[in-house]
Length: 505
Image 1: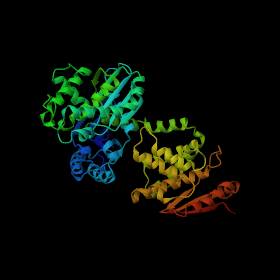
Image 2: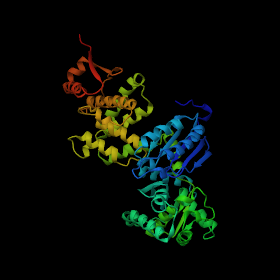
Image 3: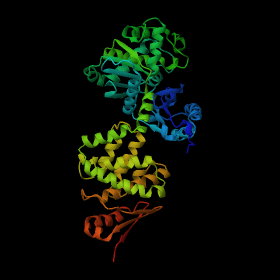
């Protein structure tokens, strides 16, 4: 638990754990403006530490943890709700990511959210839209990271199409230039490989009618700097200057011979891979000009975080949109959400539950019937699959997994195996949240528009007691039968459910 410095309560921080570089931006928000007060960037090259089996090496882990310890020192004393740390492609791929994340969270003092490629693209676009001074019309945003490339088409602040491709400056350099040699044949193969990755998307991107192309993040900025300082363009990146850059790189033959102006020693080992990906994009999409934006993922994370604190939570908008798109009975969703909220408020102190737990539980309640769009039979299984595998704007992978688990466990037998892979403390908490959702669904099975009476619930560790009015339960025979079934369904869970009847004369 962080000791929050009240003088820093208006400070917000976003940290981006990229495959090539780690970035941190800290901003101060007051009544008149948002001001960036600190930026830190370190080229950790985490992605280069992945072996052939996608295990992260100890050397790369230690390099990253040293950086995160320094970041943690800067973040110390900040409000936990004002800090968000996101992991991208390498942490999505690494088989031993869980072990690294635990060590990284200890170094930082804050949790890490792993985000999907599409969610990364959404926040990159948000970051770009926050910092552009001029809107020239529909735009194509290109972000070549260490392990993935995000391409987004949007209007103003609204993304219309988002894509995340499995190629980046680190992964491409590692694949084609690992021994430090470049040459025309290798560069040609690297560009062709990137073009093949792009090919399924090219026709669709051309139909989206973008008029403005914007590059962002380290690869795009380093390309623009090298081209500008070489005198090939006065600003931005042109098709002709990209072709000239490729020629110069291949003439150098080795990475060590790359002496382009503005190209730093840390960027040099992954520069050829990034140029190959960018050249493939220029050729495939017939791009003639690209300008550069200072905004990127961390600025988008920061804007999204501040929005959450100001009641503009993208996740809430996503849930509402899903209810509409998947024809979920909104009245029933609201009834279950309201009931589970009442249960939560009664037990949160005894069970040590948090505001985040409450938020995720209420969203799970609103989405618990999403599986009905597939079939009524086993709809809790269908719903769990959808919530685990859909692109849910604003949600981290961990949050999607929690929603999926809660929906999976909201009815029928309580299967502890569903919680496999979680830490013991997480299993206990998720089991408790799932039980509250099960009870809320049970008491609203009749879909009665009339408001339920207050149902007292008390807990003593794993013993759960519900108190029901005798007259009410007598009038609700279906609920009584469901409660009897629930006693059977919970046999393999950690809970003991007791029903007390009040008002018996």
